[in-house]
Amino acid sequence: MNTYRKTAIIVGILFIIGTVSGILSGVVTARIMASAIYPLNISASQPQWIFGTLLILLMGYPLAMIPIMLYPIFKRHNEVLAFGAVLFRGVLEAVLYTASALSMLLLLNVSEISGKTVVTDASNLQTLGTMLIGSGDWISMVLSVVFSVGTLMISTLFFQTKLVPRWLSAWGFIGAVLYFIANLANMFSLQHLALSFSGTGLLMVPLAIQEMVLAVWLIVRGFSPSAISSLSLKTLDYPK
Image (cartoon, rainbow, N blue to C red; front, side, top):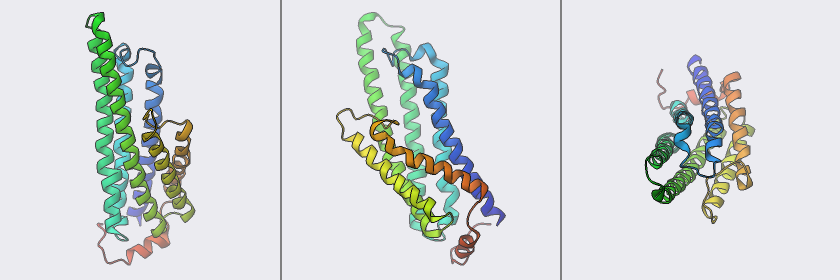
């Protein structure tokens, strides 16, 4: 039982680390991105930009660890669905977060080059920067699709196993559906902008709150003992 309790605490902490890191990254880079000459102004605030990029990785990798931590427990109920959660919220999400961070670092390179070239090249570099920003937005939107699908799997597993209260896992399922809808709307919009907490992006709020409630629940209460006992009767082996 101590193993399950530790797993619940670790998963809760990973949720919090990922969410806080994502928020901090947005705060650190917001002023830079608000500039009229963005992204050519990035090199003037290089330390902040690199720090914000590293925070993206600090958000992505802990979040990608969550389905891996839960896999040994979830597989006792449904190994295929548990593996799907690892694939989407683990492997694919980590790859896309890495791609997102690399696109940010490429923007820094463009900005550094702009400071070493003649004025006549500035428009070409601005165009290149705009293309990189657009590619970053597309990466973010694909990431949102992967995140939504993976969250649907995790919420379904939580709901079926009753490891946490069903109202909490159902909240996560509904939140993931709303998140997916919001992202799909942005993908088919004229601007193709990545989600933000405005407009259709407000549909992200229910899932954002649910994940923090889930994190606190896992840290304070852990998994349901009766659900753990039920899973222990399954024939699949759980590593001790």
